[in-house]
Each structure stands twice: as C-alpha cells, then as structure tokens.
Length: 142
Image (cartoon, rainbow, N blue to C red; front, side):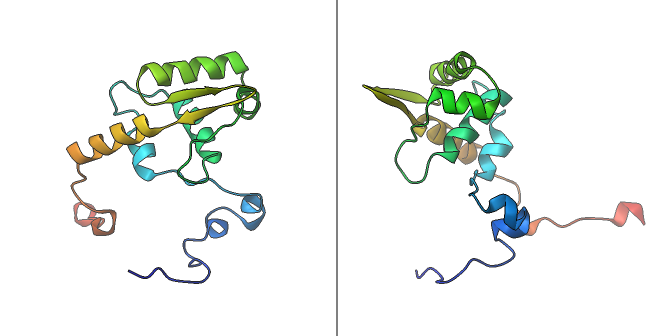
C-alpha cells in the first residue's frame, strides 16, 4: 500500500482544526479511543492521570519511551513535582505506566501497559457503528 505524498489534506490539517498560530510550535496527537475510554478501564484512570498521559504523549515522538522531567511536567500541569510523581506512581500501580529510572538523566516512561489494556478493552467492546456510518435521525422531531 502506497501512502500519499505531499501536504496533508486541508480538512485534516491541525491548523484548520486549531489555528495556524496555535500549531506553529507543534501539536500532540491523542488517540480517540484513549479519550473515549480511559474512564472505562479497570482500574479507572482519573482525569489528572489522563492529563499526565497527554503530557507524556507530547514528548513521545516515535516508538521510544518519552523522558520528560518531573519538573517540566509539573510546571506544564500547574502542580508540584510531588503531585506529578504521585500520579505517575498511581498509574504504575494500575499497570498503565512503567517508569525506567536512569542515572543522571530523567526517567523514561513506558506506556505499553496502557496501550495493551486499551487495545484489549476496544477488542472486548467494539463500537456498534463506525464513525462514518453515524447518521442523524431527525424523524422524531417531524
């Protein structure tokens, strides 16, 4: 299968979703299935834990584990580094995150546990319809 070469469709371009100024310094892709189902997972992911995952994904540029520092995460999340560490510990206990300590460097944050559990959830709970198949039925309002 050949992938199309060239600029992305204007319809799907991040700048058309946000603004050119807002995506100038980058943007972070987040899987829709994560946003739709993080509270459905068992154990449940809290909103603050989900926000930590979003911030970790901001530093995940490829298949490798991201490695932002707790201070950076804390500043961006508007909380103390202790609070961020506590959320990371909680995600680790739940099996969604694995921290890899490194000497004289920031931790690596492995999210494979989250990916596996989310994929298993999606397989066990397939959507009844694909997004492209959704149709608005207005007959009840006629």
